[in-house]
Image (cartoon, rainbow, N blue to C red; front, top):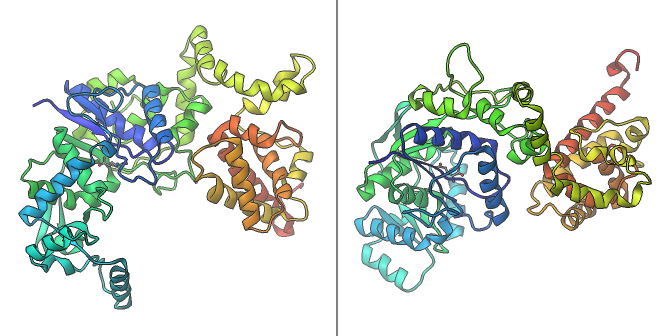
Length: 495
Ligand code: GLU
C-alpha cells in the first residue's frame, strides 16, 4: 500500500506558521517514500470556518511550494476533501458505532450538564471527570424510541471505564492513558454535525492515510482516536506527534510574541525557500555542520524517525538572518522578480496609488509620501510621538485602549476592509467610553507614523492586517515605555 500523509487544517483564521511546519514534514515524508500528500479541509466548526481562511490556506501552501496530490481544488480518488461536504458519511459511521454498542445517544440537557460540572467543581474532585455516563445505561430500545420521537440528543463514544489505552507514537514510543481520565467524547452534536474527533478518524481511514503526522497538541486526543479505530475494527495508522514550535521563552508559539500568520511573512518579504529551510530545522538536522539546504535536499535526506523532541524555538531573528542569506544568493534579475512578485507588485501598487493620487504634485513626491506603505516599521518623529498619546489621556491609558482594541475588536475581524475596520473601532470606542475622534489619531500615528495621511481606514485596509497589527503592537510598547520614563527613578540617563 502506498504511503499517504495529509495536512488537515481548520479554516478558522489566518494561515498559521505551524500549519506550514506540519505540512512540510508531511510533504517531505510522502515525497521521500514515493507516496501521496493529501490536503483536507476540516471545516466541521460551521461558525468559525470561512471561505477567506480556506483560500488563504491554499494560497500560502502554494506560495511555499508544498503542493498536494489530492485535495479540495484538485480532486482525487477519495474526495470530497472538505468535511462540510461529507456530513452524511460521519452520521452513518456514528450509527455503526451505536449499533455495536461502542457509542450511545445522550439526552442530557444543558442544565443537567451545567449542574454536573458545578457539583464536580464544588466537590473539588481530584481529576477531570467530565461526563458521568448518565445516559449510557438507557436500554437500547428506549433510546431508539426517544430518538425516533426526535428528542434532542448527541452521540457519545462509550470509553471503557477501566484499564488503560495504549497507543504507539513513532517518536515517543508507547503512550498509556488511564481510561478513567478520558471523557465520553461527543461524536455527533445535537444539530447532527460531527465533532473533529469523529470526522478526523473516519476520514483518515477512508482516505487511506498511513501516517498521521501532526502537532504535539493533539496527543491528548490520541486515546479517543485509538478507541475509535478499535471500535470500528480498523487498522491504526502510524501516529507521529511533532514537537510544538516555541517562542524564545519556550512558551507555545503565539501571536503575542511572534508573528504567526504566513501572510505576515509573505508580506514582509521572507522568501518561501528560506522559511522552508528554517522550518526544516525545527526538530531535525541535515548534519551537524550544515544549516542551509533546499527542499529537494531535505526530502532526499529526511527520516521521520530522526525528529528530535526538544521543543524547537522559532527564532525570528535567526529566520531573518537566514532569509538575508537567501536574498544575497539571488541574482539581480531574480531579486527584481521577487520584488515585483510581492512588495512592489502591480496589484499592491494599484491599491496604494489611489490613496496618493490627490496628494502629490510631482511623481518624485510619491516615494516620500507613500513610504509607510512599503517599509516594515515606521519611525515616530517628535511630533508623531506627542500625538501618539490621545488627547486628555495618559500614555498608559492610550496603550491600554490600543492593545484592547486590537485584541478584542480587530483580531476577530473576518474581513479586513475599511468599512469593517471603521465599524469595529467605533464600536470599541462606544463600548469603552472613548470619543472615536480621540482614538483615531493614535491609531493613525501607530500605523503610519504620520499625522497627515490618506483616509485612515482605507489606509489600514491597504496595509493589511499583519502590518497594522505589528505596528499597533509596537505603538503599545512605545507608549508603555513612555509611562515608565515619567517616573523619575526609571528615567534613563540623558533623557
Ligand atoms: N483540524 C486539525 C487542525 O486544525 C487537524 C489535527 C490533525 O492533524 O489531526 O490542526
